[in-house]
Length: 97
Image 1 (spheres, helix red, strand yellow):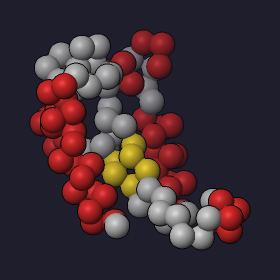
Image 2 (cartoon, rainbow, N blue to C red):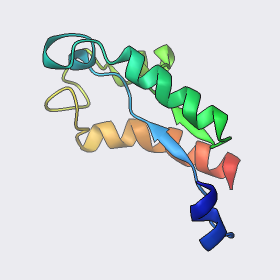
Image 3 (cartoon, rainbow, N blue to C red):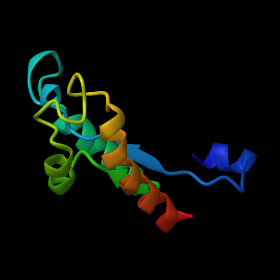
Image 4 (tube, rainbow, N blue to C red):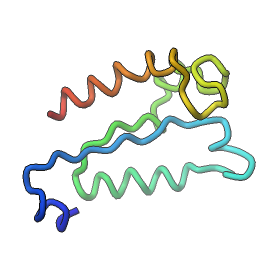
Protein backbone atom coordinates (compact mmCIF):
# COMPACT_ATOMS: atom_id res chain seq x y z
CA UNK A 1 0.00 0.00 0.00
CA UNK A 2 2.78 2.41 0.88
CA UNK A 3 4.42 1.86 -2.50
CA UNK A 4 1.13 2.44 -4.31
CA UNK A 5 0.52 5.67 -2.40
CA UNK A 6 4.07 6.85 -3.06
CA UNK A 7 3.29 6.72 -6.78
CA UNK A 8 -0.28 7.98 -6.44
CA UNK A 9 -0.37 10.15 -3.30
CA UNK A 10 -3.75 11.69 -4.10
CA UNK A 11 -5.46 8.30 -4.40
CA UNK A 12 -8.37 7.30 -2.22
CA UNK A 13 -8.37 3.64 -1.30
CA UNK A 14 -11.16 1.67 0.30
CA UNK A 15 -12.36 -1.90 0.31
CA UNK A 16 -15.70 -3.68 0.17
CA UNK A 17 -15.78 -7.09 1.88
CA UNK A 18 -18.38 -9.19 0.08
CA UNK A 19 -21.48 -10.42 1.87
CA UNK A 20 -21.53 -13.97 3.19
CA UNK A 21 -23.14 -16.51 0.92
CA UNK A 22 -24.54 -19.93 1.85
CA UNK A 23 -21.57 -21.53 0.05
CA UNK A 24 -19.10 -19.58 2.20
CA UNK A 25 -20.05 -21.81 5.13
CA UNK A 26 -20.23 -25.28 3.52
CA UNK A 27 -19.15 -27.38 0.58
CA UNK A 28 -16.05 -26.76 -1.51
CA UNK A 29 -15.38 -23.44 0.20
CA UNK A 30 -15.90 -25.01 3.66
CA UNK A 31 -16.17 -22.07 6.01
CA UNK A 32 -14.62 -18.89 4.70
CA UNK A 33 -14.81 -17.18 8.11
CA UNK A 34 -11.05 -17.41 8.83
CA UNK A 35 -10.25 -15.92 5.39
CA UNK A 36 -12.61 -12.97 5.85
CA UNK A 37 -11.52 -12.49 9.48
CA UNK A 38 -7.88 -12.17 8.40
CA UNK A 39 -8.79 -9.90 5.51
CA UNK A 40 -10.49 -7.48 7.90
CA UNK A 41 -7.49 -7.57 10.26
CA UNK A 42 -5.14 -6.65 7.41
CA UNK A 43 -7.42 -3.82 6.28
CA UNK A 44 -7.56 -2.50 9.86
CA UNK A 45 -3.77 -2.77 10.22
CA UNK A 46 -3.28 -0.54 7.18
CA UNK A 47 -6.16 1.78 8.11
CA UNK A 48 -8.00 1.09 4.89
CA UNK A 49 -11.64 2.17 5.11
CA UNK A 50 -13.75 -0.94 4.78
CA UNK A 51 -17.40 -1.71 4.17
CA UNK A 52 -17.61 -5.15 5.75
CA UNK A 53 -20.79 -6.84 4.57
CA UNK A 54 -19.52 -10.31 5.44
CA UNK A 55 -19.67 -9.72 9.19
CA UNK A 56 -22.91 -7.72 9.03
CA UNK A 57 -25.92 -9.78 10.16
CA UNK A 58 -28.33 -6.87 9.56
CA UNK A 59 -27.24 -6.70 5.91
CA UNK A 60 -27.47 -10.49 5.58
CA UNK A 61 -31.05 -10.37 6.81
CA UNK A 62 -31.97 -7.43 4.57
CA UNK A 63 -30.27 -9.00 1.53
CA UNK A 64 -31.78 -12.42 2.29
CA UNK A 65 -28.48 -14.16 1.60
CA UNK A 66 -29.94 -17.63 2.30
CA UNK A 67 -32.70 -17.20 -0.29
CA UNK A 68 -32.67 -16.55 -4.01
CA UNK A 69 -34.43 -13.22 -3.68
CA UNK A 70 -31.66 -10.80 -4.62
CA UNK A 71 -29.35 -13.27 -6.35
CA UNK A 72 -29.90 -15.90 -9.00
CA UNK A 73 -27.19 -18.17 -7.61
CA UNK A 74 -26.70 -17.05 -3.98
CA UNK A 75 -23.58 -15.12 -5.07
CA UNK A 76 -24.16 -12.63 -7.88
CA UNK A 77 -26.73 -9.89 -7.25
CA UNK A 78 -29.59 -9.53 -9.69
CA UNK A 79 -31.11 -6.13 -10.56
CA UNK A 80 -33.15 -6.05 -7.35
CA UNK A 81 -30.08 -7.13 -5.39
CA UNK A 82 -28.13 -4.15 -6.65
CA UNK A 83 -31.02 -1.94 -5.56
CA UNK A 84 -30.52 -3.26 -2.01
CA UNK A 85 -26.72 -3.16 -2.15
CA UNK A 86 -26.36 0.25 -3.79
CA UNK A 87 -27.48 2.46 -0.84
CA UNK A 88 -24.99 0.77 1.51
CA UNK A 89 -22.11 1.34 -0.90
CA UNK A 90 -23.11 4.94 -1.62
CA UNK A 91 -23.43 5.76 2.08
CA UNK A 92 -20.02 4.21 2.80
CA UNK A 93 -18.34 6.12 -0.02
CA UNK A 94 -19.98 9.40 0.97
CA UNK A 95 -18.74 8.93 4.55
CA UNK A 96 -15.20 8.24 3.33
CA UNK A 97 -14.83 10.82 0.60
